Image 1 (cartoon, one colour):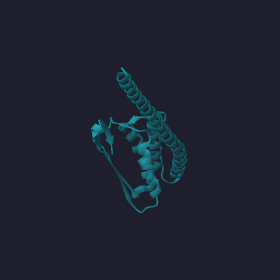
Image 2 (cartoon, rainbow, N blue to C red):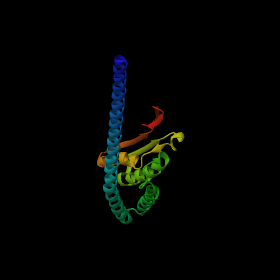
Image 3 (spheres, rainbow, N blue to C red):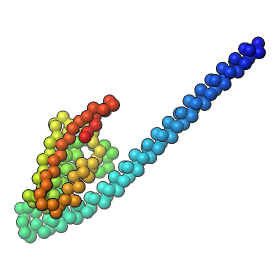
Length: 178
């Protein structure tokens, strides 16, 4: 009987230890998930702050360029104005969304690049190569515009080409745009 009690006691301790270990692992998993959620919120907040800074700067520069072109080259001013309208029309719906699709993002980026082409003239050449099937793929809002915005850092370069290629990679049961 004593051996049975000892064996039973050992079994209870073993089960209890397993339960405590499982609870500790669950608590650690919750902490990791909360930490990852906080990291994502920080990234999203930084992106929102960046959008808030970039958009007014770009808008004011574009309006100033249009104002100047009205005096010296009215047809280019008109084209730039049309591209600005297209950019604003395409980007307004995406500003408050957490996810959008590649086609909508390209609708924002194309007029953005056209505005830059008017400002940079023949120094900027653009080719966007995106397979038709990828246009409906989910894509973070304003991400392409942020990437293309780096073009402005090279506005004084003699000539350069912006080549935008998009590949779709299947990884861990999800499609990833590269």
